[in-house]
Image (cartoon, rainbow, N blue to C red; front, side, top):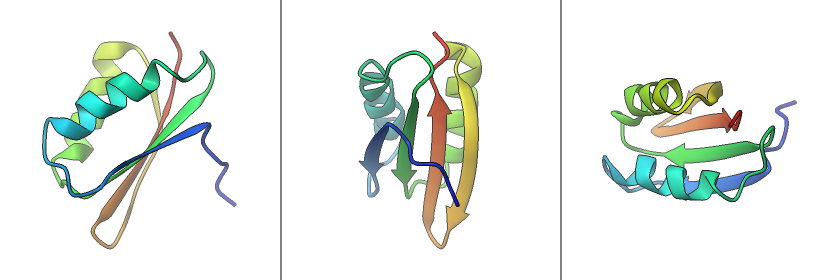
Length: 78
């Protein structure tokens, strides 16, 4: 069973850079050690969230795809 994220962001239907911008804003409401789940439909979001986590120092804990929906779970480390 997949663990539940602390906060979920529905970014489906949004194109780059909106999913990243909304995730950056939503991450501010997540406690350090908590997680943010993002649901997106932009295929470019796979590379975007990988790079976002590398540059922000957070962990991309999960990345999966179900049909045309991409799911990411970011663990806030800072």
